[in-house]
Image 1 (cartoon, rainbow, N blue to C red):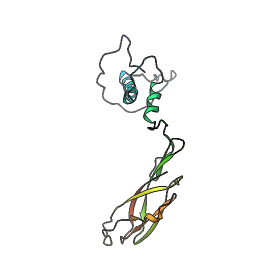
Image 2: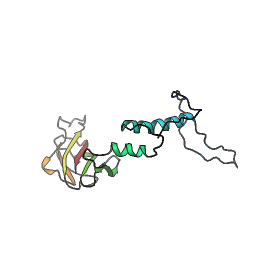
Image 3: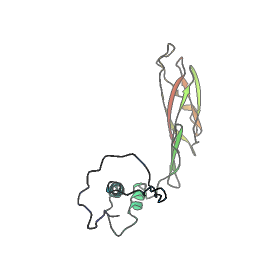
Image 4: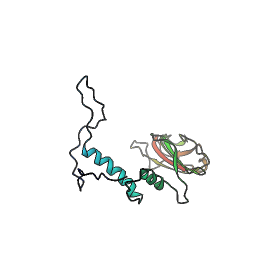
Length: 186
């Protein structure tokens, strides 16, 4: 990767023009007179600098003869301290989701979600994906309702119920409480 260096290149990054309406590249259509999308200097500079930033963050000097610097930078940035590469092997980036990272022999998972904690009782929660080995910890954050039956009792995890597939909370509030959780494990 190398910044453009031909005779028409400028020595300093020009200020970008005001943003227009976001869109996509088009091929054009001679039959209707629609011209193909014209690449602008602003767009080319943006793409160039985004790529250069990743390579520079990895501490790699730009080399015009190398065509694998972006790949090398990403591999270096996602490589564990012991030399193994950590990869995202599963992800569901939704309201009730998860992400699993693995180096091929070990995995780490984070799960999250929302549920309603039942008033004055226990509520069981099932993870969107079971942990392969074990869930180490769960943290919940309940919202206290402002109703007349609401008290200062937010839902709490019952630690003895944490398993690879879910957990339970106890809610001492007199009303159902919207609750969020984050769980970590392997």
